[in-house]
Image (cartoon, rainbow, N blue to C red; front, side, top):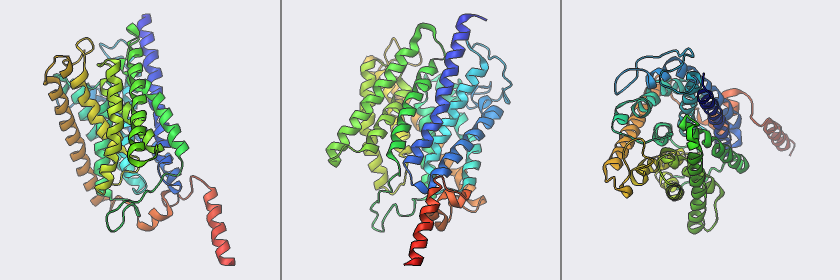
Length: 424
């Protein structure tokens, strides 16, 4: 066993751990962005559904993506047993774990559209269905040698495969579940159901930012030439540009530098650079992230104005930014770095690669949305609804779904309030 094989395996193993730790970032992001009464539920269901996606990926997900099959789906290598994979210059088990982490992240993004109103059973069932029917076909088309790969689709680490797929599933869920109680007034105006902990949200962004070095730089799956350093540099520059752009536009439009918007700007920059991090120069990475920061601001306001309740901005951060990031390689991919597909429009490649990128966005986004919408509609009919009752939603999912609060001191506070009213 040569040194390069071992070093590649070690690097990708570290990257897989970083990506899995991003689940913790998403726990803090969703918890901090929502109300205290749902905190324990959010934390618990996220861990549980990642466990479900792990088992499903082992049983069928990996084979559907990377197994031998046809341009639409893989049809072999189910129930992966740890064998080495032919043609890989690293451990097969490590590569498997790395890909499993990506599948889990996409599912976690999808569940952003369920936040604060879905039954626990809806999470459990959709975790299985998404991990079998929604995510694997798209991943196979682009990463598993499928029909989009044959066209030269550029998506180095998953702006389309992971982020847009998860966002489109979240979009379907928000439409079917409807807005949370109190989000909109009778005249259609929106209320700000503020998250309970901006410190949690900021910490989540830092964890995700660090995890993204595993997400993007780890996707080199090699230490040869230390190219992962260049990918990491582009990743960091785009995140920095995204947070600055979101701060600027929120300050101009709202008169204040909005903290949640700045945090969403950083994530939008990270999502956008995920497709292009290995294909563009550093100046382009800054521009891609900067544009993403502006886009996420207006996207969030657009969806809210249309009556779409998206508590953690999954549609904008992962959807809108994912679309922009995917298209960006069609403009900025350089001849030297375009190891997949063709150079972008600004480097003499014409409209060809931009067209391929647009085809990938439309086909993958439409597939994820339509299939998720159909699955959730069937689930709604079979499961007697996906949403908790009005009373359960008001009480909070911590108590109604699990019988305990994520913050137990809430019980003491409520008891004190009741006691003071009785003694008044």
